[in-house]
Length: 189
View 1 (cartoon, helix red, strand yellow):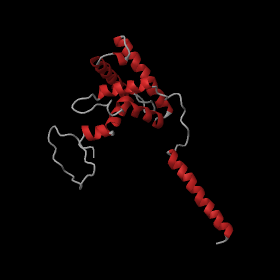
View 2: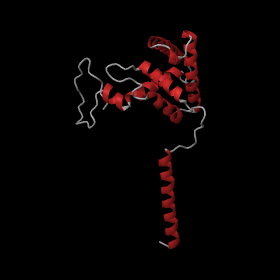
View 3: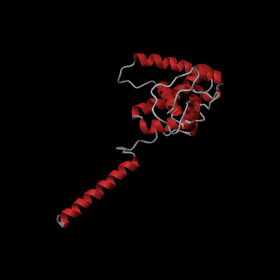
View 4: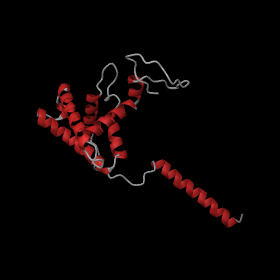
């Protein structure tokens, strides 16, 4: 191998390493996300926590608020949703507040737990009807997004996986058939 060819090959190898490490460190993002649309305020994250807590309340196990599902929703919407879905979600926060004002004369944070449940039950019914009649290219209903993110955020959190589900940190051998007794928790692992 000639010196010039060796230098060229080394430059290619090190250049590829630099570019590859940059993609690895930046999460392979091909474009910058616009700020502004998904700049959630602390009050909006608190509202999302309360919505999630209404969906998965604290019982004998911690609820969605303990799993910080509101912060999870913020990250998922900002980093993973397309701009059109981000807009639906952000507009949905305002729509949720407007529905609360219309039905109870107060914003969502100032209504009691029974009113929150009543409002979210009505929104869930609304989103199911919307999902049945929407076209494939239409975005999902904002409440479906909130509900899906609540479930995903809770059951993938440490609190949800270890306290609401059965969890074994280092699973043993594979057992294809394990008896299930009524009342047993589902498995997280």
